[in-house]
Image 1 (cartoon, helix red, strand yellow):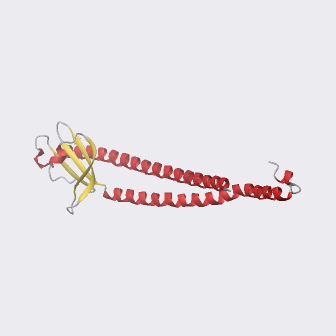
Image 2 (cartoon, rainbow, N blue to C red):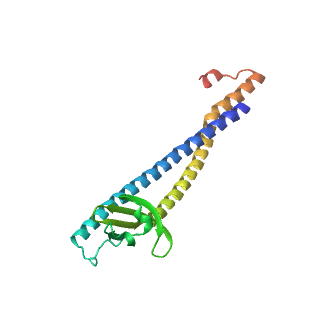
Length: 194
């Protein structure tokens, strides 16, 4: 009887671990792909926009020329006039960086900072990514709940499956006990042939 319980426990645990592992791998892959694709999209867009910003300023050197991309905080200076550039930004080479900075409402927020530097201009575009970070946290919460739900479902299926797998063994054990007391019942060879 103890062996049957151990075998059933192994089936339940194996099935639950398999379901949990498979669901967790799916969740990890989903988060990784979303993060990677989102970063690529934002980085490519910011790199392109900072270049367009510099080209716009080259064509329109007037300091009051309107720059229409309002989703960004834009700053452009000559390399020898960097006093208005925030000190923390000056150290960055051309590229796109994840930074934390003080926003318009005086709170620290996550940003992407696109930097462009050449002999004529230094340009910076700062893009608020707090909405993306919030959606990332929501996705993680949903995926964690999904992993937990599928782990419980795997456990329940494991219980059901183990009962189905173990039922012929239990029936055979009862028949074997009956054989010890009364001898073999008729037709046992065909019923448990395998």
